[in-house]
Length: 166
Image 1 (cartoon, one colour):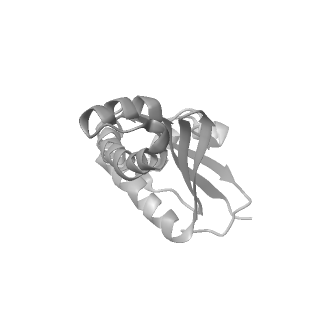
Image 2 (image 1 turned 90 degrees about the vertical axis):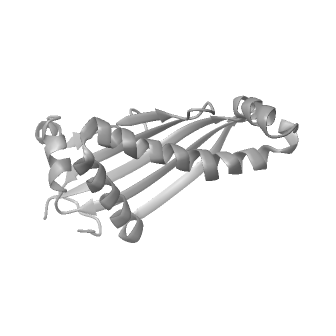
């Protein structure tokens, strides 16, 4: 059997609509939270999370370098085309939600800079890098609204390759 790497790239954000509504309604219009839940959720998913993604890429470049940032972007593009993608918005309690997305794919080899990052983390001994949906690689917070976006990568080495992407 061939050795391969299963890579899962994930994003997660906790959304407290009450806190977001406090900022949003003070600046835009007087609106009732209970009648505008969908409007606020759409605002968070369509505007705040993309803004946080832009901030995220800047932080990854700052923390790990532009090479790793570019390789992660390329991996995401490859997985979107040929791998698995899942996202969900889960209600927690009252006006609180958990939004997440996971991109997953199987690769016969890793991009060089990501491989260097894994080797610096004792990947050879453990065969695993990162935590799936637990501890992110990078966290960014919106400048205006109380929303944090956690970003992580979870890599496992396996002999049971799924349909390989690369």
